[in-house]
Image (tube, rainbow, N blue to C red; front, side, top):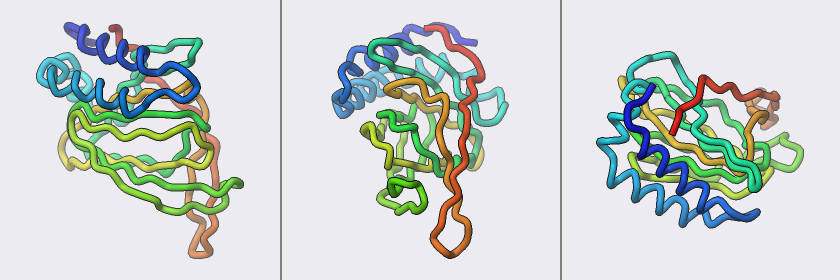
Length: 192
């Protein structure tokens, strides 16, 4: 799938070195990952060209998985104008960084029972820009590729394996939300 993956290996190594402890320093991780992306933007675009052009829909590619402490590193491919439903991250901390293209991240806060959500912010990420969240059962978000024509690529680092999570759907004008359990699918493995 890839050519020279030393740049992806460097991103993985930064995530592993910064992702220590129960509450890692996510701003420092974002700063280091962003620096790497800015310095190697063209090489990363070349390395990931296959993911940008194979047009298989939204896909999650596993870059690395580590135990003790648990960290998962993924590269996601976002088709043009693709948007996720509002979803949580099973209480894990996480960081999302744009590698290619632009993403909108709309943040939400859930009540403890997951019956109501409140919009709390919005970020726009271009190459090298990151958004992160602490381990919190109340955090949810919706992400959308801002391009109408091009696939966007993002790097995701989570404090564990995001195998299961919930999506949220408004059930009408009553302010109630329907939660649905989901299972994450991995399209394949990137070797770094």
